[in-house]
Length: 329
Image 1 (cartoon, rainbow, N blue to C red):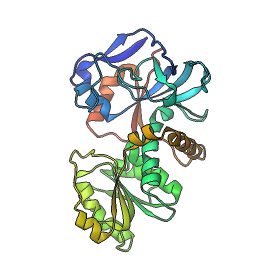
Image 2: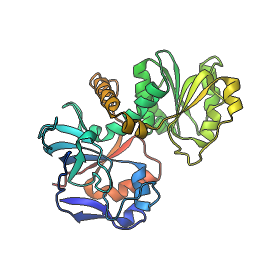
Image 3: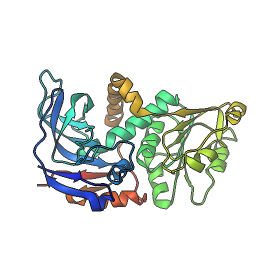
Image 4: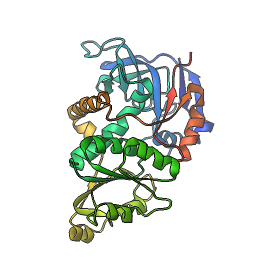
């Protein structure tokens, strides 16, 4: 089988090579999946560069989200051969290969109505956003939700999940193309941060009260400005730091304005409470079947286009998710 491997650190276009590999040997508790689609993530770039917190031994294959069919199952498995699934392969054996062996606990069913590309793009964005909004943010019907980077993976999921909950959603994005996407996703108000001040817009649309929940995957100055428009008893959800800078929040400001800064570490939650992740997955699939959520996909790439796709992702000019058609025949 073919797979994309990394044998040294560098830019993806320099170090990623397609290598003929042996089909994975399935260990106890694993299932073998024939991969149809794989989603790309920014940390795939960091892995190639050697800048990610996890540094697997060489050679390794990237690709943390895949969809496909189960072709071999462990004894006593709840899975079935031929079943359509999405899965989360673990390094060093990622999913940008024609076959991948994955621990059964990291394999989730998908409905017939979900395309391979949607399935590969589904898990990380929607589970992160669902956990953030409902478990950490306590989002309720009628709340005002401010979503930063609304055209991104987790941002687009947060807009849809916010609307499904009954929230009034204000989204930020940069440029007309991305603001139009946020409108199409259902945001009630969209702010182009390249020409508008989201703090003023939030205050105008809430009568000066501010947002009840702020979904922030950006950090830096966006977090600092968000503190200016969080409402009484509000919750600022710290999702990540796509902006690069890690901000700090003065405790006296939280006290005076009576708001909370809430960390969202979905990976730790999934590790400690895998049974809860299964329950959330079922709820998310129900929302998908009810057509209340739908993965936002920027573009599909052929298997041989992985390096150029990652180069495009590195420019941060894309939106939604980038997916790869792994089938090479």
